[in-house]
Image (tube, rainbow, N blue to C red; front, side):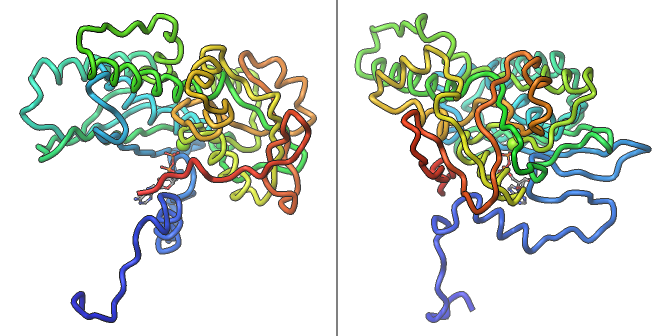
Length: 347
Ligand code: ADP
Ligand code: MG
């Protein structure tokens, strides 16, 4: 009985987001042959037609948690809601083809405002060749809620999981890291300035790149196209939604390996470095714990070194080790610093 004094309740904070997901996963091991991969990767993998698997992934954006409408244009929000989901399909080395959208709104929003949101959705659908095929709409008591499900497909022999990393693999990353978090810091800073003095107009020109990375992320379609055109398949892959720390820890945990990441190899944009300095913070915090970069983290056999060098916009940032060596950052001075799961979210 819930009123029994002897029953104690555990705070969700003791588990955190990933602890809770592990707990759910343990209770729902797949039972049916149609489920190739259930909970635990960027997208679920289901039996498809002929030589394809079907991929399914969903993500939720909640006002006040994932976005602030005081500085997020609804058009950008529509775009972002779609692309963060497509990113998880690309992370399986797949191609997305359809999405559904569940929208929670209330009459604080005008028809024109919702139109703006769907203009962003439409541009993203057109850019990445996916159809919006359904969803659900509900009123909410609080803020705006957006749940997007993405469907995609991948050739059975091309699917890439988080669990395929092998000892001595090279660890690679696209683009640069920490920029989306830098953009977030600037937008929050300008919001405070505006609240204190509404006559001051924000001047974001010198932060255009990082602000763009926060408001209008770009998923890694080019990398997946390159893999397909060059008949190349990485060993393991994950998209960087929560920051480099939690993503490399996911790959290592699921692949049963360790890793070394070289601090001096982490790609950082000059604007990210400028913002970190202005915030008196370490750029490592931005790259490792910032999140929302939607770059791709993947590992390849060391024999593919020359091949990887040919992929545009990719940096080699470290290598996979035995599990016993742990997951470490090799600092610029050469010391080993364990990579912590600081980026993991709490309730
Ligand atoms: P990502 O950052 O790539 O979106 P998540 O960390 O959100 O991945 O999710 C990791 C895995 O856990 C995925 O397989 C996802 O489908 C699953 N998952 C997340 N939340 C739940 C939930 N509430 N119930 C069941 N599975 C979940
Ligand atoms: Mg992901």
